[in-house]
Length: 463
Ligand code: GDP
Image (tube, rainbow, N blue to C red; front, side, top):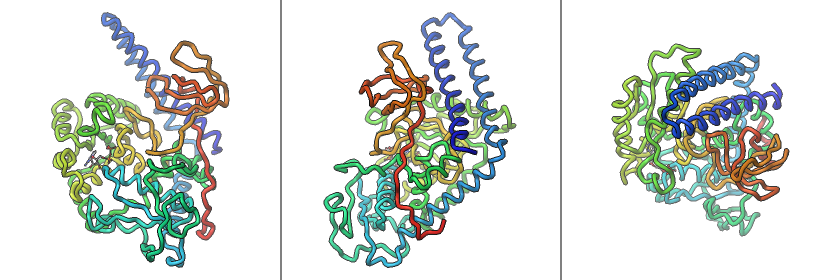
């Protein structure tokens, strides 16, 4: 399949959803204004049925176009290539002579945030051909260090040999460079997310609808390998869960996040999307039990869900949620619980979450990492996908737009629009880089602008 064909197929899918978001939002608004009009709810239900039918058929298109197996194979091959390149980078033939990048794990934040810090360091290492050395002594999850919980990120090269360490960007050429956290970078290199390597881009685009998160997922896959003890604990926990497909994962982030960094979302907001997923699936597949896996840091959600939604079967571990809800969350035990939750979410057929949470984004990255394409397998109640500290995320105008009221902005074909978010009502918010005007944009008239960066091609590693 050509890149153009794949992009067009995905665009039709996204814009079918966008059309539905628009109608759903406008009719719901009308209903709220005029409660007496019962016809509106009936129309909304009908529109929902028609949308699910359209989306269901479109999903089948990709399975029937004769390229299904090719995509599977290509995704496996590109993933394997990236893993071998990272392995090569992390195990240089001569460790003592190799250039290195030192990354400190002691960021005072949760595991999702710390994990993304390592991902950032690894991308930096890959871009600058430096072996990444993790400095994790005194780490809040295990004071002995990363290697006591996870497999080391290198088998053969873990020392700087006491060479002088220079902080980036004071010296680009120093043999050993240490990295500040991404939020403190004085200047942001162009290879930071959401950029993807030029030499792989045209392969990834042909099987995945969201290449930037798939690339990040590949880095995550290399880093996140539990050590034997941790793996055993995770396996034992997962074995008890009785995981069966189909399964929808729901990540509900509450406690300290609510009010400061994200808004509170009721359980029914998540469940509306779970229902929508199963209603669509039932158009083609018989579903005996509607299963939902709940991952959360709110100790009461599971109980509440079982009481309110008797037609669904809920999986989850209340003791994991309880630990996550308290100050004990920064221990190896709570980390085990979080990894169980993340693994379960990543195995689900679909997830409903909030991308304002690093845990929600990490679940999606892990989902992408082991699949051909998970870009249509989630719904985020708030943010679109992003990587904390990323370079600007733009969309490009594919059609012209004349501003119709004071809220939306005009653009011409080809304009780049810096994106702040999607409002899931047919519109997003952004700034037109040509006119500098900020406002609403009809999402369907734009398409994601993918950034390619000429990362090193690691010719030493066979294709
Ligand atoms: P963010 O604050 O949600 O953006 O993500 P962080 O990872 O930085 O911090 C959240 C922390 O809360 C995690 O590291 C966990 O300790 C805990 N947490 C949040 N959601 C869950 C969950 O679904 N399951 C478990 N076990 N812990 C969670």
